[in-house]
Amino acid sequence: MKKSFIWILSLVVSYSIVLAGCSLSTKTAETETMEKKKELILAIGPEPETGFDPTLGWGQYGSPLFQSTLLKRDDDLKISYDLATAYDVSSDGLLWTVQLREDVLFSDGHELTSSDVQFTFETALTSGSVLDLTILDSVEVIDPQTVKFHLRAANSTFIHSLLTLGIIPKHAYNEKYAEHPIGSGPFKLVQWDKGQQLIVEVNQHYYNKKSYFNRVTFLFLNEDAAFAAAKSGQVDMAYIPAAFSKKEVQGMRLENIQSVDNRGIMFPYVEAGGKTKEGFAIGNDVTADLAIRQAINIAIDRKLLVDGVLEGFGTPGYSVADGLPWSNDETSFKDGDMKQAKQLLLKANWKDADGNGILEKGKLKAEFTLLYPANDVTRQSLALSVADMIRPLGIHILVEGKSWDELEALKHSNALLMGWGSHDPLEIYNLFSGKTIGFEWYNSGYYSNKTVDGYLDKALTSVSEEEAITYWKKAQWDGTTGFSAKGDAPWAWLVNINHLYLVRDKLDIGKQRIQPHDHGWPITDNLVNWKWEEN
Image (cartoon, rainbow, N blue to C red; front, top):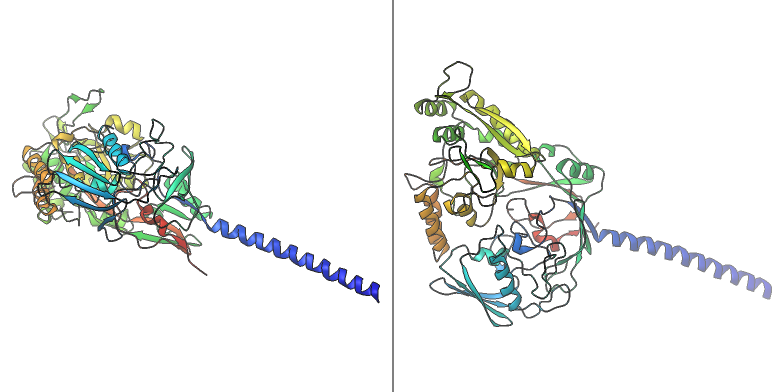
């Protein structure tokens, strides 16, 4: 009896151990699954060329991820607070006072104070990047949580610097910062394999809502590779061109997000003959002719481009700021009008003298090259479609794809299919001011109009946004002149592109705001709100 009891007891103990082992194994598997669900893999855009330094432009078109900004926009694009708790502008617009939170630490544990804000803006002021802070006279530290910005003149767009410039640490900034950023934002950089991937993790010192995901990996894939990765289940989100939008991918849905991300043709505005200090050619005799530029604008059927190239995921584009408060409705015109375009060219003495289908003006043929980035499927399709549309006019457009390095040398003497789109009207100034001729990728065509420059300067120096909007609109068209297609037509705007993403089923990406141009991964603006939906 005793032996039998001991034998039965031993069986029970053994069975319990087995059950415990099974339970442990099951728990481990569940833990691994949960840990995996806390990771995210994204293929949502190219690698930033200058790294992750806000003073060199990082964060201008989306969340800086690693850094915080003084102000931010909410999902309705209204201004709210981030690092700042309040700000005040003097009646003359020259003094901006900002109060800071007291609970902010950088990802390395150091406290963020107004000295870091001062250091950030002073560094950006002299960085020589796309950031234009020349209006800033000085930055004054009042106390650890108070900073004052002294402007040289009232400036209606200065607030956008408070919205987009991520704050960098004075104690840890050096020449390698762009590769190893330290900030007070919701994430910290863990690993960057250039040309391949970026791995980030939650910044445990972040003062606001922390991300549901502990780790996020960004894969740097071109559009074809991103789509292939989505099909094979290797990514949770992929940014795709409209050309792929009709192809269903199992386990993923298509997110169609409105944007002010436009595509258009920048024309060389001046005649050929000049050279930059680097020796790059400037100007083009064909596109320097106003009749050529205006005829192309009138002849293009933008609705057809939206339906054909964008598969309907977009809107016709007529200006750099369609639908924004500072766009000018008086610049509207009827497009797709081939008859009017031909009459315009004939009036300007463009004729098909030899009957070969290409117009001529004296010895000059109506022929030029339209360049686009070779790795961009959408821009390629737009360029080819425009060339086909314009051919019946007697204008021959040669379409060529080039690398960005090649475009750098050719952008002042050839038409270029470019993309912009910002919530900041300063972009208007950068693209059309005579003061930005040849600077970076702004005003590559060397456009200049003294009357337009006067309006742009007045818009910048306005104390209020309402006053500034009046001048932004006049710069486009004042009834006599302007930079719109109705005026000088230095651009032919084509479409506004909706941003398309393949997103894993059950991945909740929250409310999406109207997105700017796709540089800088704008969809990550609300990344801290993303999560997996409960089954």
